[in-house]
Length: 205
Image 1 (cartoon, one colour):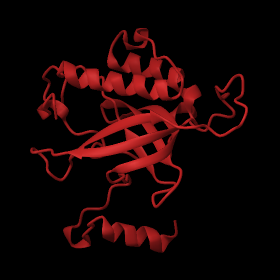
Image 2: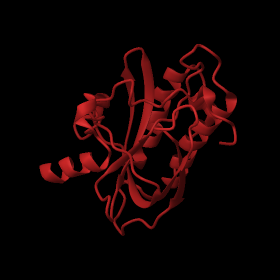
Image 3: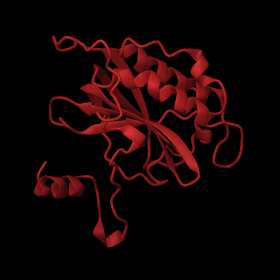
């Protein structure tokens, strides 16, 4: 994408320089169905928060080469210190297991033992061999009454036909080969980019 393309896309996103607030470095896909590849998984930290980030790259169409990241939260408490609702954690675990299934990887329950930080550390090596797997992604939005400008994103995955290429017996990258070593994503993320406080979500939202 050229510099002009980026500038035009910034205008289309509703960016207003008169408001004095810079645009986020992250972009989000609109609602729709996409053919994507599982592009990256990292355990990162921003301030005093750590989080798991799964990234997918669009392979074709108008949004080709754009990425979408999801942040399944296993945090035990919300930003206000309240206990995280069980349905929020259940949803996050289901997302992690579904992405694994799309990659023909079984995510064992034992990775969820311990606290969220330990779980994130255990999940990364389990899902990392799936990087490069193609899948279909359907994205929809649900209204966020508390913050209408940031609707809830919903994801539905299904399997896609893989390229007819022999898969290496060991698809786990070495330290020298791994571009994601030490969780260096090349993407700067601040607290405003992280998932909003989900404590206000309704279970059936």
